[in-house]
Length: 207
Image (cartoon, rainbow, N blue to C red; front, side, top):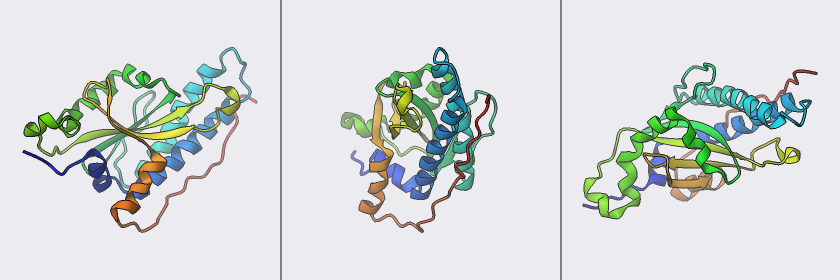
């Protein structure tokens, strides 16, 4: 049995360009708010403070972007993971330091969510095509990658579209959001060119 399905094509038919553009704006804005809020902190604990603030600020802007695109976001609740749905994909996010991709696996909740991708693993292992049936649900992460340098910590160095394997030990598909968005033009996917915008207002606390 063969299939014409590919992971990029499943993403293209499930997740709109407008949602991706909204998420891109949201993660950058959230990161900038966190950077501004942490700017006065002592070098000794700055990385930890910035990491915590990124989690909360980027969760807020990510949740708002999902809501704007009718992607049914989960409520904001403490350290909880925010996720939404678009087509067959559950959508979530996390941050990493450039090059340290195993950080995402530390979360038991993310590992549990990733089990849904067992059904699409055959798409990157052709000898398993005989077991493949298009699933009703899979998982994709938006991964914001950050430099370890304080001088360049304001915004992500890149945002990746990343589909993990069922154990989060590897990646079935991974591509920069910038490059993935170009696929919509290549595929002829229609777009109304709407781009939800979040206000970039920042508030510096502790000053």
